[in-house]
Amino acid sequence: MNLSCNDNSKKHTTSKDSETKTEFKNTHVNEHCFLYAKNNDTIQLVLKEYKTTATGYLLFNFYQKDGSHGSFEGVMKGDTLFADYNFEAEGTKSKREIIFLKKGQTLLQGYGELEVDAHNRTVFKKDATITFDDKFPLTAVACDTLDL
Image (cartoon, rainbow, N blue to C red; front, side, top):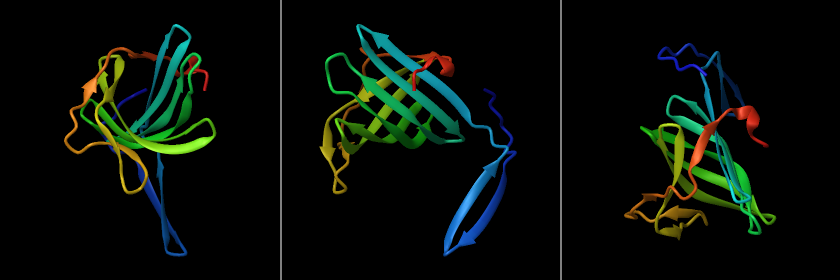
């Protein structure tokens, strides 16, 4: 994928019933894929970046444990992804905050003290210390190697 410093996007805005829709054409969206696979455990992540916006898909599949899968949307601040992960686990839909640190070709998940906010979303506490654990490092891979 290529990075571009130029914004070659063309905006097209239409209104319908007071809703505004914006379409971006010729944008440079960078897609990166990451994988952790060890001891029958896998974590797969697809990250799509456009400027500071980040979206993607995340799947946790741990051997003989509950897994989860879903999409996320957030922002990149420097080398750190801050996002809301909308996921399903055992038929239940949930939402939680996720943080990943990008170190070279590796993503490390952030851990810290959590709480449930007024919208029933699991979030990091305001003054929580976030630690980036290398227990499950996700390594950059070609996107066509993921099983999503």
